[in-house]
Image 1 (cartoon, rainbow, N blue to C red):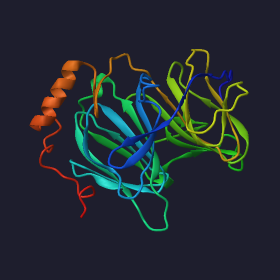
Image 2 (image 1 turned 180 degrees about the vertical axis):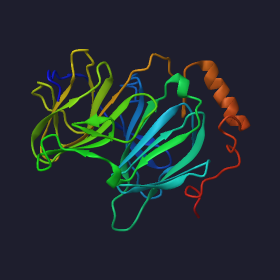
Image 3 (image 1 turned 180 degrees about the horizontal axis):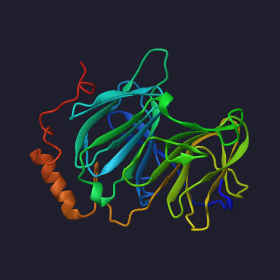
Image 4 (image 1 turned 135 degrees about the vertical axis):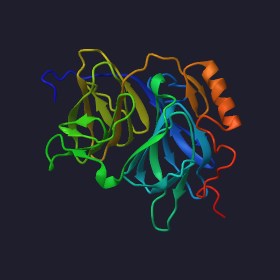
Length: 300
C-alpha cells in the first residue's frame, strides 16, 4: 500500500446489457456499448455465457489485443497460424492480434460440468504496435499468481493476471500498460490496490456488492464502474461483501484516434480501408483468409 493511500472514486456506472454475439451466444457488454464507447485504451468488455451449440466461429482481428479469462467451464481456440489449445476455468489467454490473425473460439460442453462462462476484454494497441506479428501469452489456472492483501488466511485473494498487487507480479507483459486483477472476497472486507497515476481504470463485478472509496451506496452485480484518474489518487479502496467477485482493470490511456470496423481497430480511416483490402486480397497478415477453416468450428 502507498504511504498516502488516496482512493479514486466512481465517475460513471454502466449496467452490462445482454447482447447477442457470435452464433447463438449471449454476452453482457458494458465497454463497447452505446453507454460506454470511449474508455481508452479499452475497446470492449464482454461477460459471456455460451450455451451448447453456440460459439464464436472463424473471424479475423487486427490492431488490438484480446484477453480471454475463463471463470467457469472451458473454451477451445484455434488460429490460422496453427496455434490451438484449451483455456480452462481460471486460465487466461492474452492474444496480441497485431497485423492480423484469423481464429475461432468455441465452448467445450461436457455432461455434468458447467457451461463456459468468462470475460473477454479488447485492449487497443499503441499505434506503433498495430502491425507487429501476432503473439500469445497464456497462463493455466495454476500459473496465475495470487496476492493476499491481509495474509493467506485473510478475507481477500487477488489473482494477478497482469501487473502488480501487494508484492506479487504477473509474468504477462502486454504491449502497452495494462493491469488486470480478479478480486475475490471470502468475507466482508476492504482492500486498497495501488494503480499507476493517470491510468484509466474500472471495476466490473458479477457477484455480490461493491463500494468504492468512501461511498456508502453499494453497486450491485453486472455494473462497470469507471474510476477517476486524478494525479494524487494513488489507487482505489474497494469494499466487498462475502462472496463478491470482481475484476479491477487499469490501462495507460492512448493519445490516438480509434477507427473501428468490427474486429479491425486502427487509427485512421485510410488504415481501415487498407485493412479491408488486405483481408479481401489475403495479404499482410491475412494470407490464409480464404483458404483456412478451423477444425473446432467445423466439427460434424
